[in-house]
View 1 (tube, rainbow, N blue to C red):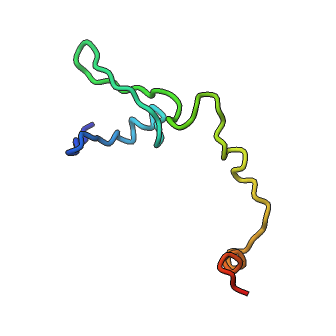
View 2: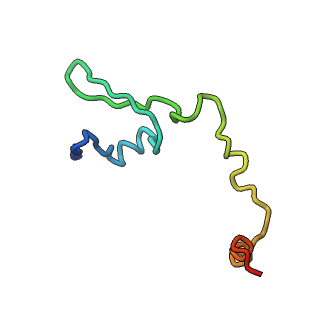
View 3: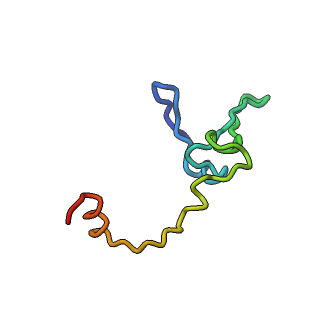
Length: 82
């Protein structure tokens, strides 16, 4: 599986590899070179902006809205339309 190196030294990790390693945007990855000269990539751990063990501050609120706004009513309210 090949990919192209950009002028900034960046590459796209192929989807099959991202899926196997469960890599999502924001994941840290470690690169290493083994004794045979092969480059090895490992998932490094938690997202960089989150401390290990600390829950996502938005997770407790996700999917909990109980206000039944209609889009047109909400937009009229936000725009100040009477």
